[in-house]
Image 1 (cartoon, rainbow, N blue to C red):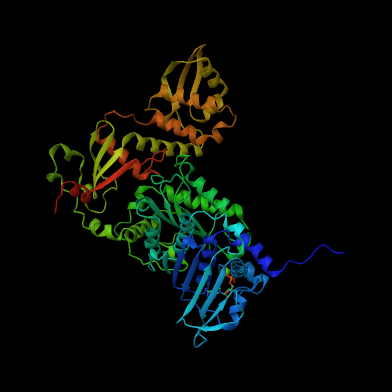
Image 2: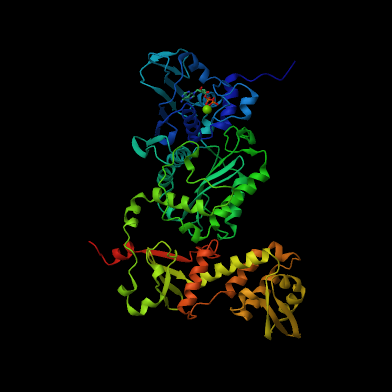
Length: 604
Ligand SMILES: Nc1ncnc2c1ncn2[C@@H]1O[C@H](COP(=O)(O)OP(=O)(O)O)[C@@H](O)[C@H]1O
Ligand SMILES: [Mg+2]
């Protein structure tokens, strides 16, 4: 007698529901995707008790005809694909034809829909069999009530109402970011929680992610062959304790993908403190045939055909964006055309750029973006008065201001130095108002980037010291100096033993000649001693360079002359990633005339 029996249909769906219907938020995700697949432009979501008691979604999409209503609830029935070929290039959110069937197996579902071909709407309940006439002007209303009423074991896994609601809200936020063109509303237990009118991407992103993100967000739009990456990436001055502001979409689908997360992580690695997480909203677009979305029923995992290529592309595009020198971000101020981005799919397009270069177009894109994202702030920014001429300024401050500092279009972004404050900050005047620069942090960043560039081209130039610098060394330091002689040479140092407990520094990297050489050599030896690997210069290159830059940079309390300060400002403008130091802190801040006026209540 056989012991293997086919499972009943309902049980099959309930098993499938285990994967697709993890909690109310997963139901909501499937329903939202169905509405978007049906071409909805307006979607209203009502939740009760965190979605457990009720999820009701109303859309203005194409609707479902009465003959299709029973099929919509049937397992493996879909209007979206018909062949393997379709599957391989699927562009809709759904295609498995199992979501509604799974949901209907663990909840009470009611479908009400008005298809254009029908004079009125029709309704079908999951516990009924007949399709009956109903009242609905257009679109589809789906009600999912009493989730897990028949599978109490699963119900036990649900968290508090507030937690389940929060998950639902997060699902809606993701969808809303991917589709700024669609209007969404969300209510919970009868009170309105979100109202998102159809908008461009910048505005939608601002509503979803919040105001703090924006001053630090850089837009990007990079293309390479069939690949495109666009969206917003926050400079390290804005980072998070968790991954909660990391939104990655592949062909409009929110995904959690190890490969993409890793590529992003790497792009920030160099400029973000290890314990912090970057914030971004990124859209990767590629030929649907190049990505398999049918990896998991919930479709938040994907598999790329060319995983390596995608990783490289994403990493480089982000790295370039984060590294765009300030000077190129400023150069396009005058000629920015105000463009109105529109969905789809180039909604996230601010300005097209060729290849991965993000030189001028990115600058223009940044400004376009800034205009859209700071719509309110922009009015006042345009009204900023031109920098006062030298005659208006206190005599002592006038020296640093040349004619270039006025609004003649050629003014440097960071302006001209006017003073040094307590040996720590440089004060500069630019077209916008006052610029404050953390002298040490800025110089450190410049040196770091220069060291990296020069090391890429071989060992950095060594400046021989006329009189060798002698330093007393511990036994450990003596040992490190001889064991790591090769690494030290690669970094541009010439160091040799001068006695049993004495080292002679005969040469330093030319870039660092101005710094405190003794401290520099000691720190470097300490760094090298911690990691006595043979390929230390390759594997820990950036950490070593950071140590070198830190000790090579001007120390606080060193008096700088105005020309020195101005030289530093000019170098900052030319340096990649100059606006944050190696520890992810900002190196400069701008205080606009408006902000200054506010301090003095001027113009009120
Ligand atoms: N809101 C909706 N508007 C129009 N048609 C819908 C809607 N929701 C579901 N459908 C129809 O029901 C079918 C089954 O939905 P579903 O079970 O989610 O499977 P899938 O989305 O994978 O096709 C869809 O293929 C679609 O034809
Ligand atoms: Mg679906």
